[in-house]
Image 1: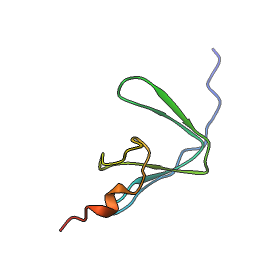
Image 2: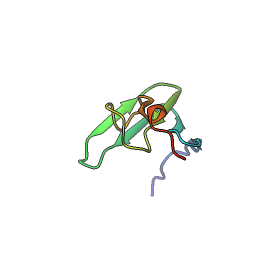
Image 3: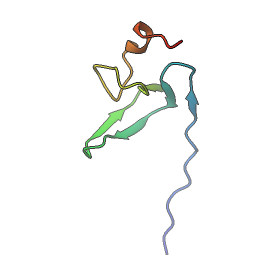
Length: 67
């Protein structure tokens, strides 16, 4: 039985009051099933859902600071 090739694990950094930083390249699959291929060496994924470019972060979280 053929096995899947060994992949190095992706590093995901959760930032305080900001995006998740994922080592790329990476494919993001949205809730509607669309796939977004990101070939950058680090991809910022929005966690606050304020980004106009969701699921990618556009730094909109900076305008809305939490207490």
